[in-house]
Figure 1 (cartoon, rainbow, N blue to C red):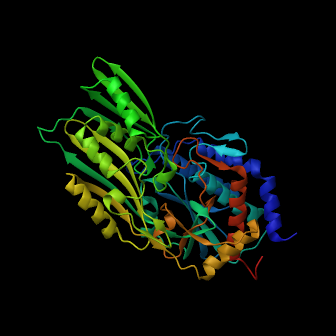
Figure 2 (figure 1 turned 180 degrees about the horizontal axis):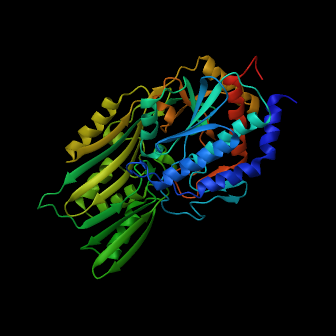
Figure 3 (figure 1 turned 90 degrees about the vertical axis):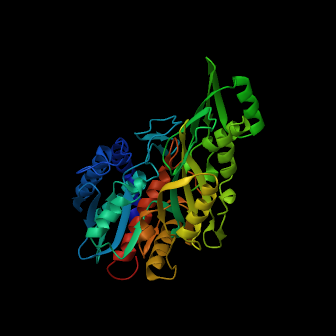
Length: 462
């Protein structure tokens, strides 16, 4: 029996243990929030970091907590030849769950719960790669360093803090993307803009759609006066959206709730945007500002064409744009957008184009968080080692692909995402009933064990 077969058998025999350890982590509500002092991303994030630290320590790894920004866990001797980055914070619960959000539910071969795929499930599975290597007595020439972050969903300040004080391994992988190998990641822009209403602007709508800027909203609501429920139903019918609506009327006030389907902000085509559906209906009702917003962000348009930024290239495909947050009242309107753009374009080109169109409609950008696109040369020994590990476990040809999301690897010259989803798979990331297949968890553990051995091996290939 060769080394890879031994690892496969070990993971099979210890799947229940892996699920038990994952359950404990998923029961922690680690939705990141800006904190202070010793809790930079809140109490839940710190609790999750401590949980994963103890789990790594129990495996026999050397661990350290860096002021609740990150936890590191080292295995092997010598300088780390490989870094594995994962995060234990999650996005908020959101709407539409049919199973407990902050727990692990097993059903039909799947693990359900917040963090199942992003990123608690893959984080624990990747640790079981080390557990298998250690307990099978497989020697390594150099060490591997895990870095678990507590604030990835807030913009990766956790890794920025750590890397400002510590050198990262030259080669870095993260189980926070897709298999086979993500060597290119689109650029990203999160934008917030405001518009103040003048005294003569007739506003009869109050809109509320709060949530994560990087999640397509599954719910948006508005309160109206000066119209009837019947008027609203006619507008809903005319809008012809795939969203569903709840309409109630009391004392001359009509409340509309739009129900869609959430999706990761980098993959808006997988969701049904409740917010763009709502503003389309309100625009048809004659609410001027909603007609403006509906023209800027048409329902089902996900490539930014109406803002003039529908760029594309062969390596990374097309721009995606999601209108995700809106607060409107009699004083003004504040909106937030999630944009991902091809590797052939720059932040200045994309944000400049957005700003020009928004400015023409009276909006001023008040905040932006941006990252340039990321691309790692495929023709390196590092990528070759990852390809061998993937092919050994799956029997399938490995290839490099582009990802729409932004991972920890984004700012690292030799950093790539390596799993955990299959390309094009929809595991309800950032949505209700997030899940990962149990067989996929096992696959992550097996592939990562093979990758660690390939890069930190003693002599020859396994």
